[in-house]
Length: 350
Image 1: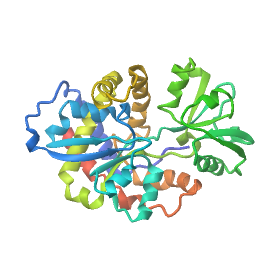
Image 2: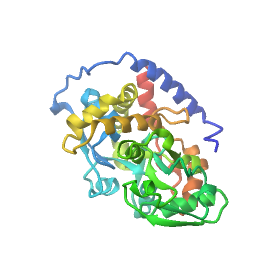
Image 3: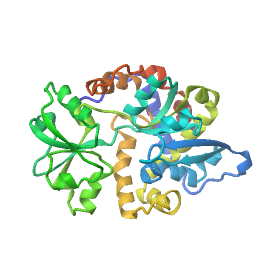
Image 4: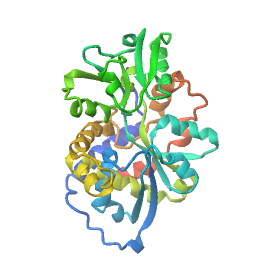
């Protein structure tokens, strides 16, 4: 599928800013020179859509190096996880100022509850959502699923249905619900397993001793379901009232995530030593996850980090969501505001 064939003029300008931004960062090595005291900083409470592991490595680097402090910001990171409230619940209740939501589908559905959100960026330019199969019986298209048994977390049927619909096929598969352990695929209980490309494939490498050519990872985007992931958002009133803080938050984040791409081991070590020190994480696994996620952060659209393109969303991403049964989706131009990111990019260019 073609990613997108035409770009808006401001997107071209922002992409140029991104190149200059990368050159600017080449001279930004070492710890920050932030001199403000804690009393001078404004706290932003950020609800994360998952535990405080390496998924947020670029933010950890920006925090540890004082980039947020340079912007007059003290970030309070609120970890998520299976037993934690959703980011939407936390922001709506006033327990967090910003949310970073992994599943854009859930976030979009929350508009129907009367929430007035504004998105100011997206960490993943390409969602890690994928199908994993064994190389001995690979799945690379909907045709490879016809009449087969498939595996996935409860609710993943809508994704399989969408994959069939986008290929012009009637859904024809048997679904077996499984958890987040990829063992059922190894045991060949099904031909495909719904996974995050930054997670379960590592289990195949570390737990089951498989090499990269022993299994196949097919991204949802390659199956007609491209989507942004880890959307950064807040209540629209809060975003509008704190524009300078939003610009500063993004500017510091851009610096951290750019540096994360230079050496994935740095963010992994920070995760184990500081931000996820009580989680019992494994350094090798966290480093590998960081290696796998950075290409998704950079993305394949040629856009700046954190960019969200409303044209791309409407013309390419929304058809996949609609095929999955999502209806009454808000128009992207009604909730996406890239002005804060544009300002952050322009200031870094200077």
